[in-house]
Image (cartoon, rainbow, N blue to C red; front, side, top):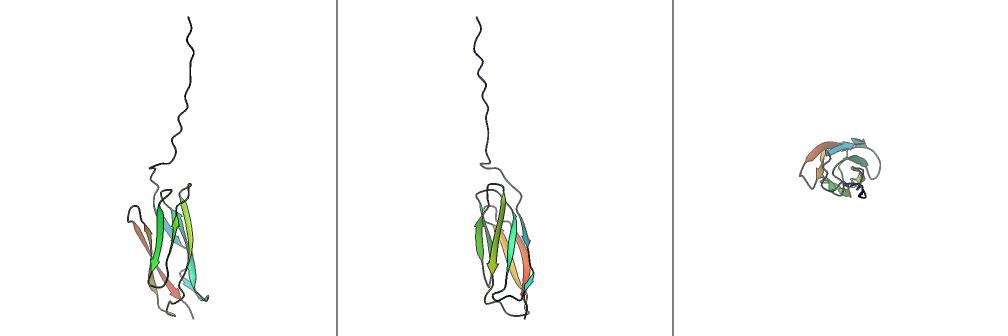
Length: 104
């Protein structure tokens, strides 16, 4: 008597998979009107990243590949005065700080 063999393949998707949070600022200065920069990095898929400052903010959900990108403008930023911009992973509270300056 021979029994039938059944093979199962189990695929586990990225639920709960942690990715390192990283953030990069494309431009540290801008003379555009309004001035702005693009921020990008990596994180855990499905989590939210916020870009926060006194002069503008934005948010984005990390995609399935663990990557994110968001453009933020700072319309009321003072000219030639640097200010802090913070990228925050809302799931872990991790933060990366940048400085941005609107040029004349």
